[in-house]
Length: 301
Image (tube, rainbow, N blue to C red; front, side, top):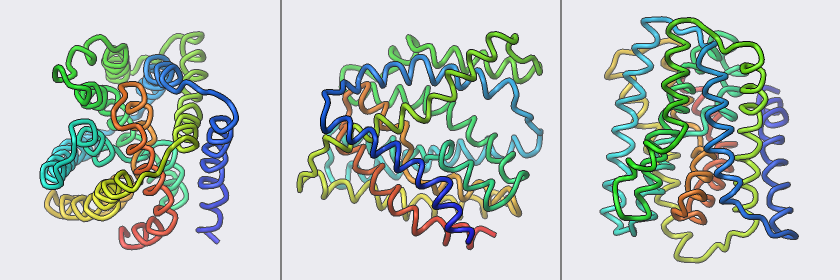
C-alpha cells in the first residue's frame, strides 16, 4: 500500500508533467533554452531565497550533512571523471556525465519519498541536504555545464549568474534568522514553487524530441550505472566510514541514491551540453527508480 501511495502521489504527477511537455514538443515548436534561462536565472534564485531563510538548521546534524555532501560530491566527480577517461567520452558528454552523477533528484522527488518513508523528522533532515544540493547545482553545476562548451573553466559564467548571489544572501538570512519582508517572501515563494514544474516540462520537451540513436544509447548506460549502482554503494560506504547512523544515515543514503536530477536537463539545455544524452540518463534512471528505490529504503533502515 505504501508503494502504491508513493506511485500515485509522486510518480504519477511527475510523469504527467513530463508527458505534457513531450506532447507540446511533438505538435508545437518549443525553444527550451529560453525556458531554461528563466528557470535557472529567475525561478531557482527565488527558490533559494524562499527556502534558506526559513530553514531550521541544527548544529551537529548540519555538520554531518555538510561533511557527507562535500565528500560525496568529490567522490561522484572522481568516479565520473574516471569513467569519462576510461570510455573516451567527448568533452560535452563527459561534463554531462559529471552533472548526472553528482546531482540527484533530491528535491521534488526525494523530499516526498522521505516524508512517506521516514515521517516528519526524516523530511526535516532531508531539507538541509536539499538546500545544499540547490546551492551546489546552481553554483558548481553552472560552472561544470558552462565548461562543457570549451573555452574556460566556467567560472566567468558562475560569477555572472544571479544564483551565486541569491545563495549567499539566503545563507546570511538563514544564519541571522531573518526572513524576507512579507511582499518579497510571497513573490519569492510564488516563483520558487514554479521551478520544479518548469524544469519537469523542459525534461518532457527534451524527451519528446529526443532521437534515441544507437551511439547515444551505448554511452547513456555509463551514466545510468554510475547513478543507479555506483553512487548508492559509495554513499553507503561513506556513511559507514563517517560513523553516521540511524535516521540521518537512512535519509542521506536515500537522498544521495535518487535518480539523476531534472535540474541537469535545464543546465544542459541552457549551455548546450549533451542535451539529448542528459535527458536520456534522467529518463532511464527515473524509470528504474520506481523499482530500486523501495529496495534501497528497506536496506537503509
